[in-house]
Length: 209
Image (cartoon, rainbow, N blue to C red; front, side, top):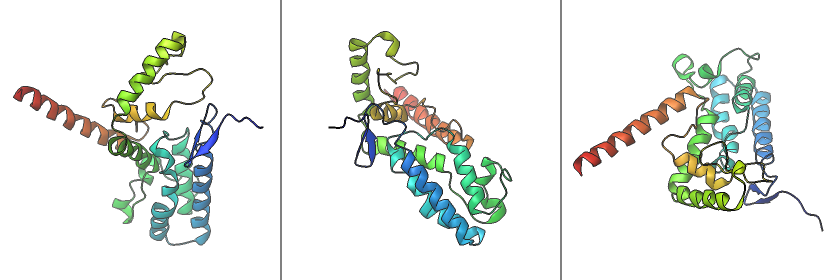
């Protein structure tokens, strides 16, 4: 009998060694779709539409529970250059996802869509994530050395596991002070607006009480 450190269940890898595997297949499919759009040699507007509808969605299922992989922005920018038949480093990431004012077509930001996917899943499908994660944190405090509590707030580092628990990722997405989208200024600004609106509503409720 073979014992493995990871296994796939409902499209997600679980287990102590699952962290490096969850993004391997989606990223491979993402790059393959970008190559297919490149080979089709469509006009830029049609390539952007194909990218938005066929390429980007390959990343959104896993992003419901897993944060974007490292170097996603570079991977995404490379794919955008490929579908538009541009030489490498022709345009910046900020310009690549804000082409509509100068070109008439729009390319969706994968990073923004992935962060939004996790926040939406946390709010709609598992709103009790913060409470469950608190139980996980308390259990970690009771059963493992303090060194494994975690350097990041709300993320216990369990010995032998190479990634955070799904529930910890969702709990982070539900926090008003989360750092999702820190690498994408437009998404970070959007999140700040939501936070300000929530805080304003909370203050109004407190004054009413």
